[in-house]
Image (cartoon, rainbow, N blue to C red; front, side, top):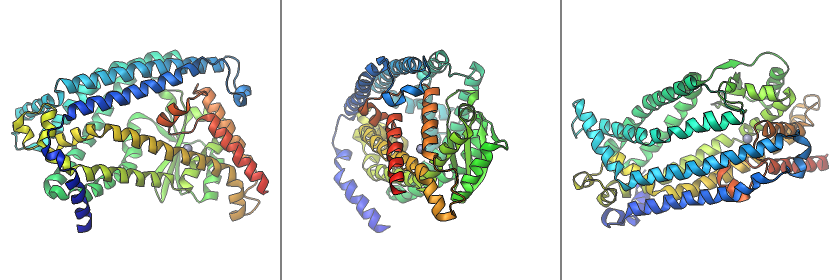
Length: 468
Ligand SMILES: [Zn+2]
């Protein structure tokens, strides 16, 4: 532990200028965040002309029914326009909030809010919770019209929206409720750790965050998701027996197999698994079941189980822990830095002894450009995982034959083709874009494009046939 703290002290020493120098951090944040937004707008401008193409890529031509490609292009165009406008709107809003010292105002507002309940300035934790909620509503309410428009105009126009206004409001209220009942205790413990451990908070906070994530793995599907969706056991039949057979061949610890009523809100479709290492649950969207053949859904699940087999979620978790660790390791330098607060319009009386939550929030804003780079890196890892899982599905037959004998592997030879068919039909039904600019995709997409994945599948299949 001392070794860790010595290393952290070196980092903090390097960053000591933050505590002493008067740097115009606000100007930096404004400049950086505008740079990120303008870059994202530039990407949209690169992508936009592709929506005017009149034909799908040659490899996909046969998969589009007449009119389907035009529909997907029109949907893409509308979504791009919306992304362009809403990106600039959100950034303008954030920029104005920053310019007019909204964060400093929110801290004062939180102080008078908790004051009404009899908590004075010594109660930093209640005031911090109030502060976060003032910020949350201050930044959420102005963007509400965007989600209303996206759901009831954009998605509606292209036939995806199944949400009613009552459902929309209900979801909103519920998600705010969940945010409050989870967020407030989380924040309280988070801040308590700082009070208790002082500047040696890094390992304790890491331990807390990991435990919180593990608790969420259990809590999310059992308590939170049922607030929004209904999960019901998948009905007996061809699909169920296929998936159960697949899981048992791979020794996947399948406990529950659910169908989720995704169609209640949208006709976009998906499948995923979750759970603790010894007990896993698979969830399939009813829309996926309606849109695809059982043997295609099975191939989608073969891909998903590939993620499990290669421990992709665990690896992602480790990468994200490393990310959190880096952030926390840099934070102490910003924790006692009055100049940072002063540059964001906080009163000198507050800046001289920075509240932890304020320092953390400002630190996060200063990190924005770094986070943009990190997210590109995360996307790159996730794309690699997608290819690996696709390859897993293609090679599944060989793997099963090797471990369980030829009989068990029967009928699995075309898993790759089935997966390809499923991907194409999902893309076509979801009107997903088939023409994608590479830079746009690298920045935004955690999945390779459809054409890339089909090319990959073809390559793995050729390699497999060669081996046989
Ligand atoms: Zn995947």
